[in-house]
Image (cartoon, rainbow, N blue to C red; front, side, top):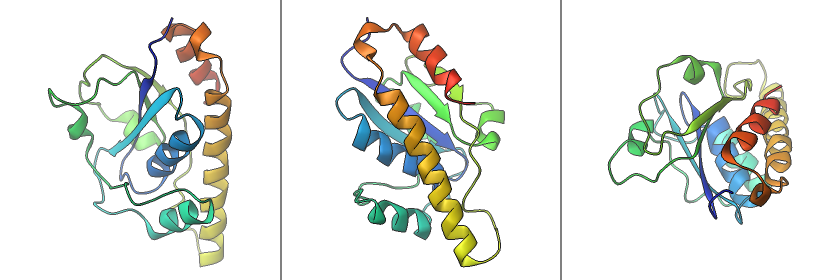
Length: 163
């Protein structure tokens, strides 16, 4: 049996797009079962403007988000993390710090919408595509009957959603 709410940390390099969107989406869809966080290995220090636009277009509050280092989750008073989900290959290939709670980790290989991709219209489309991909994965995850699963079963399910 799982505890009441699980702490989920989404990681990417800059913590300005994918991980922020994932945190916002998990707060929307999984608020009853999960507590969402995000961080980056090399945080940009600000949220990408198109991330803010995407959150606003989808009626997601963007005021509490900030680009922050994953080091904030290694302190003695940091929340105990149950799962770390990397949403970019760079962060997945880096040596992660030791997080309190010895979380299980999963990698979701999701393209960076903030990369240079030509016109503004193409970048808007890329942000929308990534947002929709994250939303689909998170909705599947939050629809699980987590009260009937153990940590390893949930971990296996998360790994399946990485395909």
